[in-house]
Structures are given as structure tokens and as C-alpha cells.
Amino acid sequence: MIRSSRRRRTLSGLVLASLFSPLGWSSTVHADRLADALGIVPDDAVAWLVIPSLSALNADLGDMLDRANRPELAVAGRPIDVIISQFGIAAGFDERGSLAAWAESGESLAEGDGVIAVPVEDASRFIDANFEPDAAEGASAHRTRDGEVVHLRVAEAHVLISSREDLLTDWKPSQNLADELSKGFGPDASRGMRQADLVMRVDGGTLQSTRDAAIEAAEANAPAAGMAGMADLGMGSMIDRLGSDAAELVIAIDVDALAIGVRSWTRFDADGPMSALASKIEAPVGPASESVLGRLPNQRFYMAMGVDFDGLGGYAGMMRLFSALDVDATMVPGWMSKIGPSMHGMEFAMYPSKLGVAMGGALNDASLILLTDDPDAVRSAMADAVPAMSGVTGALERKTTWEKDVKQRKGGIADEFEMTAAIAKAKQRDDSGTVGEASLQLTVEKMMFGPRGLKGLGRVVGGGYVMTFSRRPDVLARAVEAGVGTPGLDADPTLTSMRSWLPANPDVEMFIDVGQLGRLARQVASLVPGADGMVPELPADMPPIGFGLAFGPVDGEARLEWAMVVPSEVVGLAVGNAISQAMEGVRGEGGE
Image (cartoon, rainbow, N blue to C red):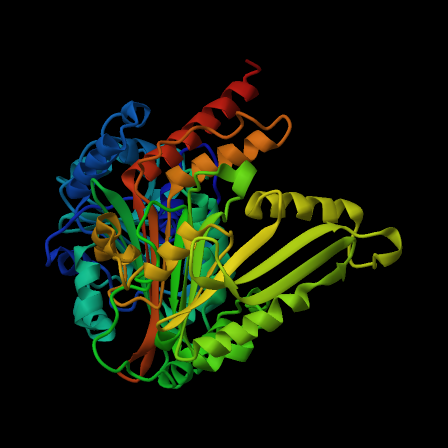
């Protein structure tokens, strides 16, 4: 377990902090740097982390901070100097070398007993400058500046540091760790790992035995409060939901002037339940799709998401995977089960509306397409599902309608559906909700659909059924034409460039535009008494955050790959806000 505090971290705590703080340091490295860095890690390590080139890391972090255009982040000096200062390392440190940390058992990992290999220019100078010998504690024992007892061993261009002498006495450098890693994951994944700047690996058995400690450590060691959720994406929630048959997990991080990319690969035991699920996924006919956003309008968005049901083994396969990963199945609407067998996928996006939240709601310019071989069946299922939502739940009464083939005032026909909500009369209410809860729900729905409630359109199109959540004919026209008569959102050049950071053939892909969402949040806040001005103004031109996930069989095993890319502008914003909050806390403690 790692303890997090404002004081300088001790060197023994650094080992676990390194292994379970995935959002941190990296840079672009040469193809053989990873193998070279792994040479010092013993083959029997159950968990390890390497930074192949600290100097390249420093350069890339510096470029990213410059790109983020946040001068306050550069006040402390070079990023590598900040790292050195944080851990109390003085003379003799070699920033041109590689850094590694590892643990040789789940127990030692959970207790924080591991080894860290620090690159040095001169081992004697490094030891003399940073440690004091303590012969009473053993021949290899030294004390840090904080008085902690550690053991040291010189290993060529590194000094090995551990809280346990036996871990250093028994140490032997790797013979084939890099080769085994490449063999386990294959050439494509290995290429991604070798291009990364920080790589860490955890054995599957160790992953499960130390799951709770790993989650707690990932949360406690986020580099800053504003990055905690991203650190959780690196370890916490994914560890919590991985099946018990995970054989090996690797997370790789790449820092670039443009963004931070986090990428993960998980292998599952060939005889385990996840591999059994993957074996039911049939190989696609023809070339694999490179995007799941091709049927969405190509314009600036709040959020866009696509799911390839076929890539997950169809609707049934997707639900089996949800169950295996302990995803709440109630998030999938009931009507989906009726049309699931005919579904190939779905795509959804929200776009900024010229009417704004107050007049049109957040979904005024949004589109959903359900991709299917049988769009008429989907249409029929929706025609049944919408009216079925009428009635009273708690203190909220809903009234819904569905009408087929309505002639539109600007030409053409479309299905029209409507849902309004109001506080139910006292005699109609049940015990499942209160008036206060119903009032809050009404407020949320007005922000989503506008003051008149949901009034949407639907139309059968080639390969699917399109739905919008307003009666605007221009919104429906764009949704119908997207990816057929006009380019889809997958043609957006920004998204195209970001996909090099994501899985090549994703089953799930999502992009979130932080700048546009900031504008939306400010509009919402302006509608809440006393909340106007609480949401900071964000640059509207920031690139979006991207996420992709792929699951399927590889060589008889299940593989789960996911990746997240966070543009430097967003990183700078998050870290800058975290620094501001920390400074506010310091001022508050000081009584100023």
C-alpha cells in the first residue's frame, strides 16, 4: 500500500508509487530502448515498470508544457529537475539513462517491498551524495536523508535500491524478458509498447491477488487531483472489472508535444471464461472497419460515440462481455433486446445547437443511428417502446406518443414521437419517488430536451434507423445524409490524426470535446440561480479527448485493448486547475 502525503516520498515508497502511478513520465524512444531498459529487470519479476529514456522524457514533457500554453506549469523549471527534487536525489544521477522498478511477488508488491534501479553517472558519487552507510543494519544498508533504512547494490550503470537486502542479494538481470513480452502480445502490440515512453506490466495472478491494493494505490498516487480520474482509467476501474483469468496486463504511456496517450493490452488465459467469450466472435467478412463514427454528421460536437456490435460478437456477445466485466446491464434499454439479433452497431453524437440549452435543450442537435439489416423491425420496436413509457413513476407523470409517416412541413415524411413530463397529482403518485426527486428530474429533462419536452423524428435509412431529438428538419436531413450523401464524422481530420493513438479497429470509440462541453456547462449554469459564473470559461478550440476499445480472440486467447489520448491543451488545463486548487488549499491552511 502506498501512503500519499505532501512530504517528500521515501525511496522505498517510490517503488510502488512507480508501479501504480501510470500517468506520469514518458517520451518517444527508439525501437530497441525498451529491450535495453528491461535488461536490468529480473525474469521472475511479477510486476515491473520502466522508463527507457529519462532525457527524452524530459524533452517531451517540456514540449508538451510549451504546447499547453500554461506558463505557470514551467515555473518550477525542467520537468526532470522537478522529479529529481521530489525524490530527494542529488549528485550522480544520470538523466540520460533508463529507470526501472519491480517486485518479485504479490506480497512484496502489496507491502511496498520492491527494487528501483536508478541510472547513475558515477555510482560511488551518487551513493556518497545521497546516502549514509549504516553498518549496524547490514553490509549493504544505508540511510536516506529522511532517516529511512534502505539497501543498495551497484549494477553497472544503475544503483539498485530496496528496503529488503535479500531482493538485492538474489538479483539477476533479465535474459529474455523483452522477447517473452513480444511473444506474449504479438508484433502489433509490441510495436506500440516499444514506441511508448513508460511501460509497466503486471502478471495476471498478481493482478488479482493485489487488486484492492492496486486500486487504492492508483487513486492515492495520481500526480494531481485534477488527474485522479485519468489515473483511475490507468489502473483502478479496469483492474476492478477484469476477469479472474487475466494472464498479463501491460500499460504503456506516450508523451508527445500534442498529447498524452495511455494504452493497455490484456491477455486472458486460453482456458478461461474471457477466452471462451472471445471464441464466439466470428471474424468479420471483408476488411475490418477503421471507424465506428462513419454515419454521424461531420461537424463540431460535444460528444460522439460508436459501438460495433459485430466486433463484440453481436448483441448477445456484447451482453456476455458486459456481464463478464460486471458492467451494469440496466444501462441497456429493454427495447434493445427485441432488436438485438438484427443489430450491427449504433452511433450517437451531440452537437452544439444554435438555439442553446434554454430554448432547445442539450439534445436539440443530436442524432442516433441504429445500424441493422432490418430497419423496419427497429422502427416497430421503437413504436412500441415510446408509448410504453407513459404513466406515473413516483411523483412524475409521463405522456408519450408515436405517429408513423407524418408529412413534414419542409417535405418528406418521418415518424414523430413526443414525451412530456409533469408532477403527478397526489392521488396518482406511488412510493418509488418523491416530489423533490420528480422536480429535479424535470429540471434535468428540460435542460436535455428544452422547455417543451422531447419532440423527436425518426426515419428508415439504408442500413439503419435514424432518430433525432428535436423537430428540426435540418438536423434530420444531416443525420440521414451522413456517411452516405456526405462524409461522416470519421472524416474529421482531427479525429483521423488522433486515431493513430487508438486501437486500429475499435469495437467502441468515443470522443469528448472538453472545450465545447465547457460552453454547454456554462449555459446550464446560467439557468441555475446563483450558479452563473461558477463554470470557468474554456478555450472552445481545444482538441477532444479520444477513447477506443477492442476485444476479440488472438491465437486462441482473448485480448482486450483500450487506449485514451488526452491533448496537451486539456492536460495543461487539468494540471493548471489542480495547481490552483492546491495553492488555494495552502492559503486556506495558512489562514490567508
